[in-house]
Length: 134
Image (cartoon, rainbow, N blue to C red; front, side, top):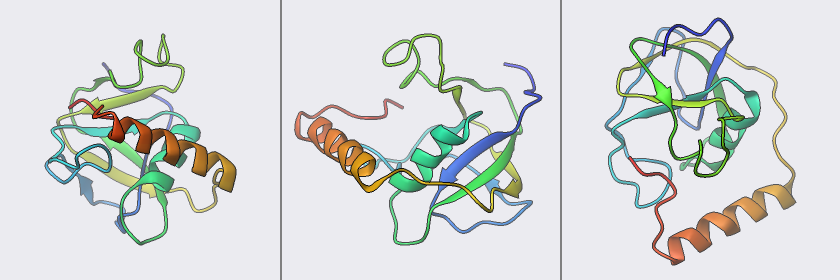
């Protein structure tokens, strides 16, 4: 894909700073937590909010504004398989994402929404289904 004129976001619990790069190779926040071959990001705050809330770790969720440093593609974990046409506008890349800002104020999901999503992810795990196919 080519450069995206709208803001792009990455949700996480990692504490990072403007200028830092988010790179592949760290344990995935989902599934078996194997080393991720891709870095995931989205053009919607909704998708980034889920990333920030569901990420592993004890820190608070954070949403960074990012710029891809190389080519990227639609996230096949969400497109067509779950949301045909990519309405979540979710993407992945093998190249680093450069942090250019942070969303200081964002609204998280309700406790019920989080519980429902965590229950769904736990059920996938119980069934041996990877939430992220890397």
